[in-house]
Length: 384
Image: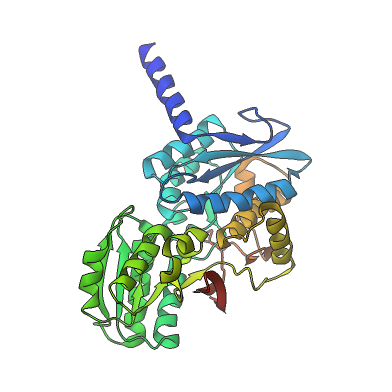
């Protein structure tokens, strides 16, 4: 009896820690009138701004498309707090306590990987919005995604550096506690060496941890190698600080990053120092891809009175992809949703057409943006 009581208290603590909130009906557990979609995002902590941007897109889609199969769609929101342990707790809440029909999220590949085994064990399909590390879906038959992968993002980033910028020497700064950053840095480095044919073209590699604020030592070491480009695929806050401190040290190298820079916090933290920074991402507000893009942009601007982040468009798409799977399956049973997701083909999302391949990944193009006059500006699109 004492063991049961302790377990109940621990379960309750995990549920409270996850910060569960409900959009729509307030009942928990399965309901014949409600289809529950879990929103598995970091709403606080180091990745809070990214998680909030994805949540904005999901909420908008739910507002515009609140029903499917004649039933109300209820969002069950948990905060995984930008922490791997908390992410596992949050995933457990969605799978075991809330018994959701499907899950959207998370911003951050490491967080997605923490929740992945829990969703798989419960046989609940999860759709990652912007988690680009290959290991999110690898070996997990219940995890899908609506974004491109880091091997592709790393290749196009290296190609941009070598062919568009004519870079010969590159330094890399990795957020070593972040699986996304480490993986993307490797894919970039491997491709850049291949393109240049020079094993010594990566002149320096420096590491830091999530939450670090002072990068003087890493940058001072890199400065002596005079790189043409610095590739820094980390979280938006730390990346902006790195660029800011590099400029203060008089470093002129071109900075290139990945999709994690595509949030307004990057501009706010970096200020004038991030002018000219270039990064790969998923979506460009100034170049609508299709009619769904145009409708999304119009609705988002009306709803939030601001410009959407690229991941907001992907959050919107992830919700619609799940609804499309439910319609095609004519069922809200998690296993049937999962099976229908594997058959997603040429679905018109706001961030482009989505086809789910055999590895449960989306074949998507990459967009390059730069920072100009304090805003993100479209440069080019690169297809797989």
